[in-house]
Image 1 (tube, rainbow, N blue to C red):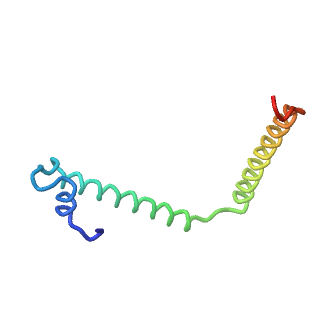
Image 2 (spheres, helix red, strand yellow; image 1 turned 120 degrees about the vertical axis):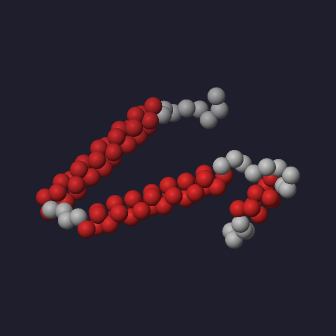
Image 3 (cartoon, helix red, strand yellow; image 1 turned 180 degrees about the vertical axis):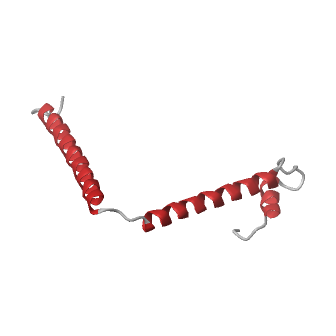
Length: 95
């Protein structure tokens, strides 16, 4: 089915008596063009990031910020676990 033409797909979906949607070809072309631009932009961003040099100082800063963020996240999870576990008391199995 991936090799079917647009006309074949439309005939399968709408049948032979229904009209084709208005400006279908223009919308399809615009969609393909936009997707190609997005792919090209992602590729150029990835290429630029790969080629961009980073200083040791900036690398250490990024690692420190990431570690601090993970530390805060870990502390937050631990405090939530403590709050939830302190609220759990001995409760009867059937209430």
